[in-house]
Image 1: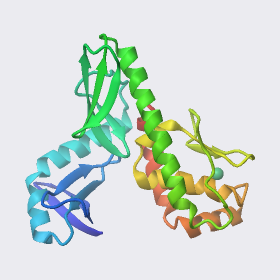
Image 2 (image 1 turned 90 degrees about the horizontal axis):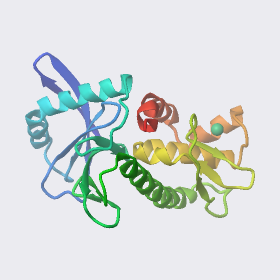
Image 3 (image 1 turned 90 degrees about the vertical axis):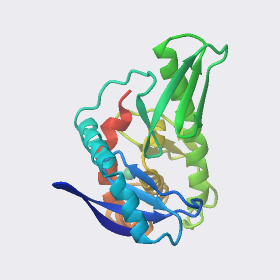
Length: 241
Ligand SMILES: [Zn+2]
């Protein structure tokens, strides 16, 4: 991962460039919920080319950074109407609400969360979207636990992930060996989700917040403090309904 500097008028910001194997030609620019700028480029794409592409989008980047900062300071109540943005795995997606189908469906297609509802009803849109997040959370979190499992020799099998809406917490673990996760965590960036899962999986060896626990956490997630700080900063935004 390379870190570069973008300048635009009086303003400047750093951005990180990640090589993404699935990209062939395009360069993708994202502004994370905390305002960080992430650029995805095809492997071996010349940095000069990346710089030009990012510079072209400078105005858009700073506008999005400003709105990210504003929404962290003052999360607005959600309205569940077309054009509004909602988070999924740390990225902002617009929702598009269409009325008329007999059955309600939610699908992420071409970067837009498409919601079909039989009648104009914001509460219904909200419920369906929440259900979609919960389904996505169940799939994603269980898959991540399976992937992370290999490194933890104290766990013979993947702990069950239970989704539990919580007001103040992202995760906890039960003495029976399952992990409770707040379904809203699916809105957070992937590295923050991993931090929460690793934290809970470490609790299955060290059941408290002792020095030994933090030593273990540091071993499996060296930059956990950075990830936690990022998650804390955007918590209110992700939990806003
Ligand atoms: Zn803990």
